[in-house]
Image: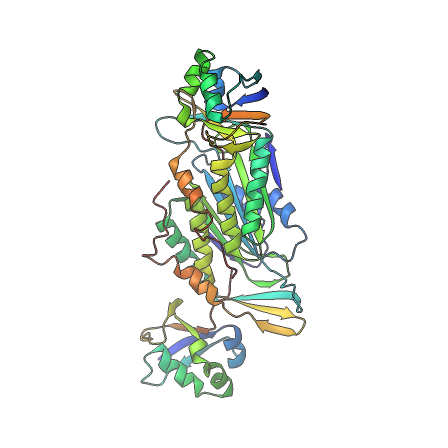
Amino acid sequence: MSIKLLYFAWVREQVGVGEETVDLPDGITTVSDLMTWLKSRDEGYAAAFAKAPLIRAAVDQEHAQHDASISDAREIAFFPPVTGG
Amino acid sequence: MSIKLLYFAWVREQVGVGEETVDLPDGITTVSDLMTWLKSRDEGYAAAFAKAPLIRAAVDQEHAQHDASISDAREIAFFPPVTGG
Amino acid sequence: MIRVQSENFDIGTEIEQLRAGRTDVGAIVSFTGTVRDLGGVERISDMTLEHYPGMTERALEALEADARARWPLQDSLVIHRHGTLQPGENIVLVVTLSKHRQAAFEAAAFMMDDLKTRAPFWKKETTDTGPRWVEARESDDVAAARWQRGASNETAGE
Amino acid sequence: MIRVQSENFDIGTEIEQLRAGRTDVGAIVSFTGTVRDLGGVERISDMTLEHYPGMTERALEALEADARARWPLQDSLVIHRHGTLQPGENIVLVVTLSKHRQAAFEAAAFMMDDLKTRAPFWKKETTDTGPRWVEARESDDVAAARWQRGASNETAGE
């Protein structure tokens, strides 16, 4: 499964990239699974996703819980709690 | 006691005057006493102050209840509930 | 600052003058009340605002002082017009500047609710069927009452 | 209407465009959020707003639609900037037009509270001691929660 990933704010800074397209291994069905897999990729991802409880996710541009399914998702984003306004 | 009286909105229209200075007879010590005395003056005052419960008063430019004292007052105003804003 | 005037005001100009040069403000709230054509069977051709010169200024100053005693405001402004106004025209402007949005919102809402029940203005509408004095609304007393001491609407600070 | 832009906006111009030609509006509320210099030991020299293009527009459209489903609004506007801003500059503008003041106030306050917790923006401040990401505040979650269905903040109409 090929999927677009986006990172914002300090998640982006620690991961070292703002956007990428990845092929997911089998068995990754939730946001949480995806975060665990990303953490294993390299030191930057490990540092960013070590703070997993602080990280928010959006699946196809809608806020999503960590247990949300990512089947059929085309775009998943990770970021800290929002601070606009 | 010489005192300045002001009337606003439909109270003014029914009384027929916006402002006047009157000499009050003895024994008029509250807003309510003054309203009763005014009602006896002529038909216009009688019509206006027949609706006494609807009429609000200000003593020296501060909102006042009908039982408020008017001793030492220099200026008393009568008007309907306010409708600004 | 308070002003009572027959001339119109420009909302943007008033806000920009109040905020000019400040970097300690995080939230600016403005409320503008306008003459509304009721849009029912009757149409309003104009509205005349009568007021009590002297007492009006005192009442507006008092309500602004009350707001500033209850909420941390950097500055505030109340402008109320009198005279004859057409549908769509500005009647009243309240602006609040604060560090925090909740204080700015609450203080502006409080000032309008308080103004509606305390400031000595009276509206007379000219309608299709003749002139008539606008009657006070009970809902305005209810709105003002929710700010009474003890109703605890104050922001403790964000 | 919603807009996401790096350019500044003029509060007065935006309000006047929204209200132009209308006589069915009685209340106009505007909220402007600005870059605040904290004024403590640290000074903020600037602030950069990062956002999620695409999702930002969806989030702002959703919160405006929610507000208009809950309060009777004649019109509304949300503008949010991104990019680098100096202390004192505008960040966000919300404008609501309604027949009644309480609906205009509540809808504007709701939109700001909702925006603070849902719109994908992130602030990074440059201070005396270096850059830092602004942390989300628990008070914003509390403010947003008070509008949840069942909290009955809606105006029944004046």
